[in-house]
Image (cartoon, rainbow, N blue to C red; front, side, top):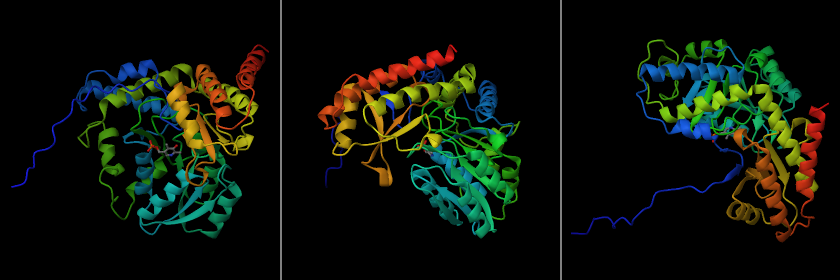
Length: 408
Ligand SMILES: *Cc1c(COP(=O)(O)O)cnc(C)c1O
């Protein structure tokens, strides 16, 4: 007889994550009020108190998305679940979907269409540029059978923002519904769902909303719901079938669908209250202000931004890695010696760019200055010559100029 008893378990201490400054592509730093909200007591998901909190969450999300859509709520799952939910509900086998791709996340949309049995017609754009609306127009002319247009508003892999209002307008004029990824834009740059006329929009909790990962706010127009209700085939995912989720999030008489991640929802409730207190306009302005200082500092160090100015996301700043500098070594030193996390390049941009996120609660002056000061220390040893102090003072100047502008 062989011995099947497992090895004795070594003593495992409690896990205490170190404090980091999260300046990558998400997650972002949590506000202390969000952290406090997460640790509250658990109540049942059908408890009237919990149901009341869910109703408030829906109102807060309508504000964040700038929409009157009744079907606006957080899905239990990360942004990827939001993406997949939109595709599995709106795409039926045999449907043609125009997918715009200018980075990693557009590529995932193509994968989703194909897994739904649809045909993806891809509008390709260079990584780092926004989607060219004329290319979408041309694709729709060439494919009058298309039923859905999908694109990423804020491409986190490059830091480029596309013109969502124009792209949704073109989709609508060609009789198509739109699926829009706002994972990185919601709470960072304007997301105006009703003004755009967008039909199915998803986001994520851990980027500019600065909540824990694992929730995906979504909103659906009446036309999108009509399309789901008129499907010929059943949605292939039981968990993501909106017809079923609606009985939990949408109905007045709630029934069990799945156990909602209650504590994460407490956190999102508080994160959205913070957003409402600051006000969307002020939030957008704050992201632009700190972006301007970070940009001034990065450029003073001789780092070149990837995205042309008009399409630059303030909350996601991609720069080219200088010739001869070891990507991994710099990021490791920033993390281990300065507690600063930044993002690596993805796909064809791996090893070629760094991504500096300034998302939500991470988007603060102390973080901009900490990142620039750390880079000034780390880059010379990595082979990129610079004069220490210049980046930091360029950022200070950028802040000072903004005070002057504000003072008139
Ligand atoms: C992060 C991200 C996602 C995926 O979100 P997860 O929460 O990681 O699943 C999708 N789209 C974009 C644009 C993102 O930045």
